[in-house]
Length: 249
Length: 236
Image 1 (cartoon, each protein chain N blue to C red):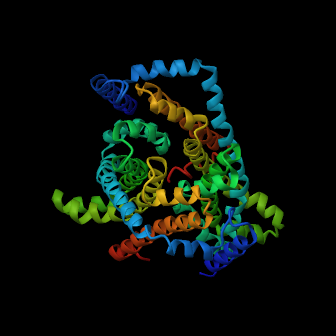
Image 2: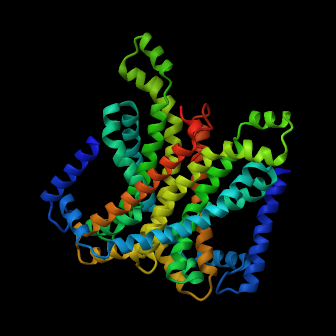
Image 3: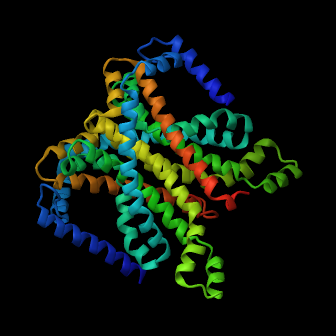
């Protein structure tokens, strides 16, 4: 029944799109049928494939850097009051500041090459990794730590046996949110310097038909869905004991 | 407070040590802000875009989110489509928005709407779905009429998450405003930012960035204050 309703929603949406597309014409809104055929042509062009890879690579590198910095930082901030007081205001400031505002200065600092894109990705995704890890670290059950302490566990043992398993689902949730933001920010960065998928989008926007533009949007949507769903599956598989974390936000 | 002061001091020191093109000290950024005559006007214009976009977005997102949270078939029907649309980065819509709305105010408002819509929708629907059943049951046992149910139970029970939705949405809307002003035809704060960048005026850039950050922080804190004021009963 739920599946049926979901399909109905999807089908109704596609039908409405198709109808609107037919009446408005390709120049304003290409119907899904045209978009699908455009998507097939896009996939067949080796150059487009290379360009899209040009976008995925910096997203992954930046995401890796974000995790490497964000996870330890979030854990430290969650467990130490001093570091929390020192860093939290700045983190809140960066979260509310749009990365787009920092882009001009990043262009001055890093140029408009590959590292610029990576820089934008790191600056926009690292905060979400830090915040989620931080929340996990703050919420570690005191009683668990007390049990460890009563059994005279060493610091290393406490970390590997208590803190890490309790933190793990949050790390995965943070990684997932971070990855979504990494993909978003690659598009933002590349729209500024017009390479990769941003360049493709810009070019497609110049064309008379919107079919290519919409095909690219569908493609980006696909990449985003696959990435976030994939990490979600991985989280469920690696840490089945706390599956629901990270469903919110 | 201390950390903010320490951070500003660090900014000042790094700014003085590095060449001015790369990074400017805090004092230079502040003084360049004071010398930008166009700043107040730009802020007002930006805020107008922000307010329009945010209002449109909230008016659509909150009732829809509420319906999705309370009525199961609405949720099931909208869920797949909205998840898909949410997966598209808002900035990717920009070329499409240019086709539809042009390069100016309309497009900027549209990007604000897109950037804040989904966050508010998600929070509103999760919140509405999680309203305590017992509250509703109590009202039903006292056979409250529908409109009493709405005014006495549903609305007060929803206010906390509605405030959260508005707050998160507003922060996203600030980000949307500046993104639109930078990526569409440059305007207001975005134009000031790009002008400074074109002249390698790092102090100017940093000043504007700080202004944008402060703007975001102010609207967030403002809503938090309002929330605390209205939701007295929620306070621990």
